Image 1 (cartoon, rainbow, N blue to C red):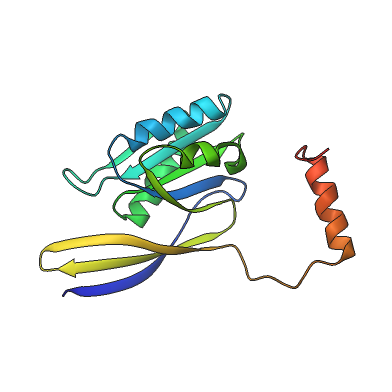
Image 2 (image 1 turned 180 degrees about the horizontal axis):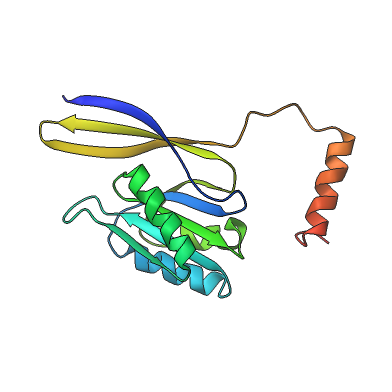
Length: 167
């Protein structure tokens, strides 16, 4: 058995940009997730990066926005975990695309969908010359600061209506 090293990788992005981080299992994931994004929110700007885990072991990047493509590529390099993918988006939200992405046949799981500051917990295993990296989980946002009271409930309900997600 080889050594295992744990580390955290911080997702780097502008504060208002959302992303989805997940695990998939096949090279065509990058194209299928691209098509899913376009079909879900045609006006959205986005990019997906996929870390291939065998063969050439390349980071595959597709998208319709150069800034999002740079974010996806940079963060995929930093994470470097086999068969992981990350989608960055603007002019749309995970809420608009998450179910469709979960239904892409190659997608195995979703670790998070957020705009919060996020750290990815990575395990790196070395066995002789071979090295692999995997995502153990994520730290999404901050620790709760209490239970909502009547004013918090009123704020939440008003906010959802103000942004058009409730009547």
